[in-house]
Amino acid sequence: MKIVKVVCAPGRTGFYFDDQKAIKQGAKMDGFFYDGVPETSGFTAIRQAGESISLMLVLEDGSIAWGDCAAVQYSGAGGRDPLFLAEDFIPVIMRDIAPKLEGRVVDSFRDTMEEFERMTDRDGNRLHTAIRYGLSQAILDCVAKTKSKLMCEVIAEEYGTTVSEEMIPIFSQTGDARHDNADKMILKRVHVLPHALINNLEKLGPNGDTLVEYTAWLRDRILRYRQDPAYHPVFHIDVYGTVGLLFGYENIEVITDYLERLEKAACPFALRVEGPIDAGSREGQLEWLAKLTRLVDERGINVELVADEWCNTVDDVRAFVDAGAGHMIQIKTPDLGSLHNTADAVLYCKEKGVGAYMGGTCNETNRSAETCVHVAMAMKPDQILAKPGMGVDEGVMIVYNEMQRILALRGAKR
Image (tube, rainbow, N blue to C red; front, side):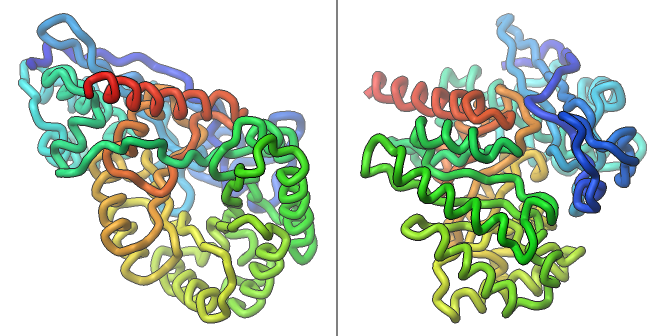
């Protein structure tokens, strides 16, 4: 179907842009603000309102295909693209992308987005990952409308997969309300929990004791209040490299001892620890996370390590998988740009027997989250993030309901 016009609208995301560097260095919270001076280029405050751009394609039959351009909460950190502000990037879309789309017939998602992934703007810069992310959602929607298919069916058709006939496990995150929000997750029987946002040393505690105590509290909370004894979630805790910051990322024996403490605190629940170290560069992260992964395996510790920092592109995902740097890879959808890269990354993980966590950020929108569900249903990752936001209920509702709609619609067709 032909694209007649491109229209953009500025939007809000489900959370905020946060300066990770300043927070790791100990910036203190005052209510929902952070005191102090930002450390990452582009930030005017340590916490800023999240922004998005709705990229809408007006089609020749009058229908609208659309997606939301959005970037991660910790923009500009760990090798990621810089802060994404609507007023800066709507002109780029209208100047550089709209002329290439208007009047064009689009009938292939993957081929079209491979073209735009290679594209540069008039200044010779590659398009911001957030633009490629939102554009891929709009193009996928356009192809689905053209073919009268669900977006997941378009992905499955182009990749030679089958759409899942069951739920993909959902992973929810508490934010800093790690006790009350964990209760919400238990009530809603979330498959993977709690994330916990351990993004500074204070939350980790002296010798990591605070996190060990929290993990034990969560274990006891589930055992006490679960309404069905069959409810047996996986624990997944994101520590943002703070364990390596506390003990030294090269001290993998000491870190492994600590991971064993966490394993015991979580028992009888399986445990994943995301971002145990941050070695400060892609090469360092590949080397030291791989060493830590091997040591955990050699010692038979029942903890899965999840790669995140410095794993920002589909090439990075392949490199981390090939290096054995982590038992599971977070495929952070906005960082990979076009959603066809996310699909490629999930496939690569599955082919190599490494866990595929189709993640993203609390700083997305309902639209980007729903579109990601379609990719997940076609590619079958091991888990998908409930997003956007940090309130649990909203993100779980959006992702769960879209999954159920897909299952119901496809069931009705059969």
